[in-house]
Amino acid sequence: MNELRKFIDNISPMTDSDWEFFSSKLQEVKLKKNSTLLQVGKVENYLYFISKGIIRLYIPRVESDLTFGFLFENEFVTGYDSFLSRMPSEYQIETLTESVLWRISKKDLEEVYERTNNGNIIGRKMAENMFLIKSKREISLLNKTAEERYLNLFIERPKLLQQIQLKHIASYIGVTPQALSRIRKRIN
Image (spheres, helix red, strand yellow):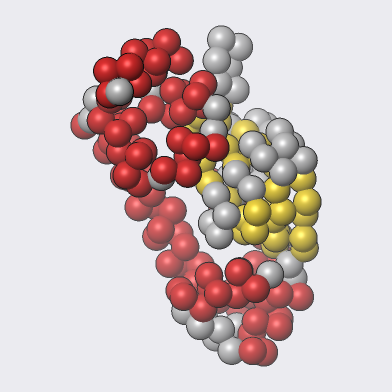
């Protein structure tokens, strides 16, 4: 939980009493590899902080899943659109490795926003950060070639290339595993 405190304090430091209140609402969750956090058709009820592990966001399809996000240690994960709208999710979230997460329910998070000095500031900054990540990904898909998107992963997320199956990386950059293999051969 110390890494979560450091993460939050980097955004907007909490007083000890606010941290005590916030941390009292957190629940530790330990999951095995390939565990589902959120299923298609279910409403997201939690915001998670990843203490350990790698998480994938994807749309399940018969022919092959469409991966659109990966999250790592010291990042938050949630089906944010479902979390906010209370509508069923159109995608799934799963662990790619054994994971340790800290979660807070929507109800408890709302209470933190109301009762702490800077809960709203932290929530707003996290929402802004999620928007920027999503926007950057959309622009990349529209403006860059698959090869450029793959090369950007080397620069921006080298952990991704070392720890995630190539089929998931191929889906993330918008190509088939065979096309990714050709891209990798050209680069090498």
